[in-house]
Length: 599
Image 1: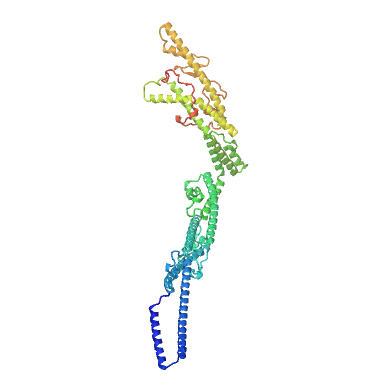
Image 2: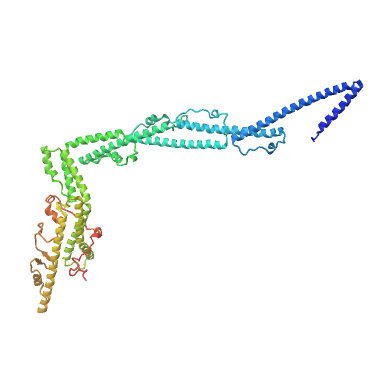
């Protein structure tokens, strides 16, 4: 049963009261029953029409409320879907269909209004981000015009969710990063163009403005252009400038090479060179490290070219003098390196050819320059052997000093510096013992060099191996002579001992001296007991028994340097003797009578 509301009870009571009052009036009037029934039927029909009209109106109102609620719910669902707001849910009483439509409408309306405000705010965010995206895109593409971002957002925008907003923001950050990279790249290119223009002496403003006006003198109203076209233009400009820089650098190097050659040939003074010292500092640097302003400008190159032209004209008038000077330099280099110079360009021949006009002085000078280069290259390949020769010669000098020292009768007497001489003698004996190993290693190195170079190793015109072999032979002969001298001395001492035992006294110094100086087949002994070799003729015409060295050998073989120079050597360096030359041999002087080293 439906519950009866108090208002319905009151209405029923009022209707019954009015009906009874109407029946009383009908009774007072005297209406018959038929009329009463007709009037009651009419009254009932009118009441039904009123109820029916009210019910229709109520039904229409309900339908409108239901439609409003449905529309609000649909709008709410659309907003939630568009905004992607998963935190917004329908209230529980909205899902319960027993609640009234007005209550449902009252609940959903605030939610819809709140989401509408969120949508408007979200649209503004989208518009701002899309505006920045389109602006950056226009800057990258090179087109400065772009449409209003709010107008570009259509009313049918269905996805305004935070996810979509995040995608736009991510895309914006990517574009901003690309813009920053492009801007740094543009600035780096501009700086490179500026530095290269400074080196080449070119107008930076004109060069950079030809690429794009915004790159030079940028104003706040005009941003720096970072489009692909601008980057490509800058790269092309840099490529052209680098090519021009490379061409000028090579041209300046060629001019400087000629300038240095002319300075060397003409023996220019430091004052004459001072104006062009800037060029020398530039060409010594790698091309990429040249940053000095106007270092490769056309003015600098032109000035250097004019100086080369001036020196070339001056050179032509002094060619003969230059030929003689360079030939002297060649001979000096050959003397220091013990290499025979080419006789075809000797000073007397060169003078004769120049005076007769048979040869161009420039060609002759070029030939001498080539010979100098060849001699320097050969000297470099001979350096190791030459160093060994110097060590061997120094050891020979120590040997000569040791011989003189051993001939000194007072070498062991007390006096100032005696201990230093003793120490030097000890070191000299060690060095002399190494001479055979030095010679053998030097021969081995020389033969190896000759095999590699396919030519003989000449020392002042004589083959070094021949000199060394003759030195070994003469040294062996000298050793044999010393051995015979020692044997003879022992024999003499034995005779003296026998004579003392026979006569009971020693001979007088005069007679002993004359006895010791008695000759033999090979030489004679002097008063101190040392053997003086008699002159002999070696295979190369040596008049004495002294071992042949490059110094003594070349003095007889090399007539070219006989009158012009004397061979000098460096002092002996005992530390510099290599370990490979330290093969032990029997001491030559260790058995010297009276030596402190003899046990």
